Amino acid sequence: MRLPAHRRPTIGAVLLAVTAVLAPAATAHAAASSPYAAPAAPAPAPAPDAQALVRALRSTTAAGAPGAMARFTGPGGVLARTVGVRDRSTGAPMDPRARFRIGSVTKTFSTVVLLQLVAEGRLGLDDPVGRHLPGLLPDDRITVRHLLTHRSGLADYTEAMFARTVPGFEAVRTRVFAPRELVDLALREPRTAEPGAAYGYSNTNFVIVGMLVEKVTGRPVGREYEDRIIRPLKLRDTSYVHPDTAVRGRHVRGYLHPDEAGAALVDATEQTASWAQAAGAMISNPADLNTFVSALLAGRLLPDRLMDQMLAMSPTDTAGTRFYGLGLRRYDLSCGVSVYGHTGTVQGYYTYAFATRDGRRSLAAMANTSNRGEANTALGGTLEAAFCGARAAAAPAAGRGFAVRAEPDLPERG
Image (cartoon, rainbow, N blue to C red; front, side, top):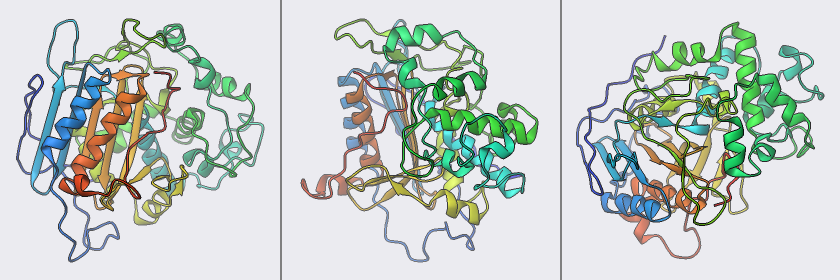
């Protein structure tokens, strides 16, 4: 259905220092006719700052993550850096080949599948959700577009579910939810706004997106990820295994910080992730995430008219540096570069997966902890290091300086 992405080279991991690999980049290039192709005479892109990348990763481990890693792809090749460990019990070093839970980066996968169905005429962005899922929601004004832009006004059921971080997690670690159960949990809470009135991040929206995919296709959402994205792009380390609990093969173990200061980390690796489903239950690795976001931004997964819709952004912060479109974030960095993708938080893992608008440069970064906001913010520093390079250090201290403070996909208390 789609052209496959090139396979990435394998990269070894090293403890507290690391591996830089220069090889042909696994990036997707848009066709010359696509509006997402690079300009005919683009300004030279800044080279990634490898030392700054390592500093950001070390800041992440200093803030409480056992390990962290980042993988950048660009016209010059692949640059990978790792710090710390992927398994505290064995001391195994962080490894950029290893799989991990990507949390809400899943939302971008879910959006692509739904927009492909829109392209096929099987539903419309401005269809009321009730047209396809009658009786699910009490308000027929809520549309498919409202779900994808987090403007439905539906409460996020995870706020109550994880009011106490570790007890909340242990209560759902092995549970298997029907999607309707999660929606019903959200409907017990007050609305955050009228439909379309305001941005309000809510996992409920994307649980319903998964329900729409299954209703329209008559197939499990995991099959749609596989047939529409994973196989065409040859994402060999990406999967949706819900409700299986294991992360198969070489993987990173994830560690959850309790709310109580000084309490021992909780190994959260094995879980059904059923509380997240199409909002956050996928597994991947850095190379596959590079391939996915590059292919998406290069226009290889959606027709141009729907990429235009996906990239129509509204601000989510008062500073005007963070935006959300259809299942896609935009960050405007200190050097003037804008990057597109998604953040992910699931118990034990923080993830960033972003690319430039033409898809030629991409970054995937991960830390194996959560409920530790300082670590999440520090990991966001990899964006500046990768996409701004030396320009990040030269950015003025006041004014347009950028620091990622990602909106958490789960309530943050650490």
